[in-house]
Length: 224
Image (cartoon, rainbow, N blue to C red; front, top):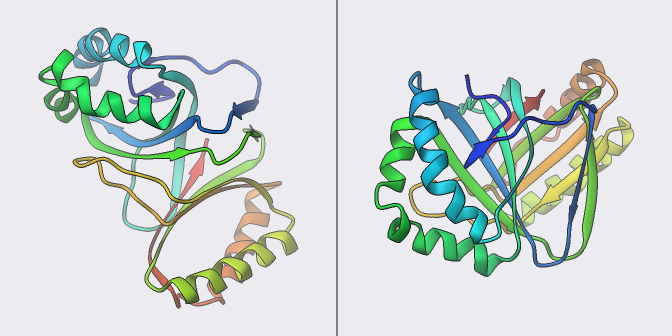
């Protein structure tokens, strides 16, 4: 089973339940939603040896990711929520443009290893630091909009509902990019933290009353 393994290598998360993240303006955050095929272990060893060194030379840094515990909304059910860091948007896109020069069967390897591989990457507009406490209920939600005006209204109401429910906004991501072949491009990706599953469920009940005006689609995952 794919668990806490980065897209280009296996890195165990430290023992602390609180994970700290820090990005400088211009650095890039990868969000990958992955599921592994049964032959993952043997094929990934080859993938790690071929693709990972190229990524590292182009500034890729693995950072702690998460197993997906359960799915609360949407029709997509990946196993893992994986994160990564690049020094710049230029470096991130250089890798995408040049990787087949170094590893000609790069995409074929991925198809053999992963049944799901979706990627969104975000350039940081400013310096940002955040933490995720695995002792809490951590939820990642991706929204696609159908109408900008109605969606912005929904966002404002959503944020008020989260504040009322004493949820903590961990990270809010917009303007993500997604490469050809791995398309996953929500208009808004948000990670929230709740003291308990009950608090999160109460929040969900409030959000359900907002309706779906402005919404085209949603995926929601509880992280572990």
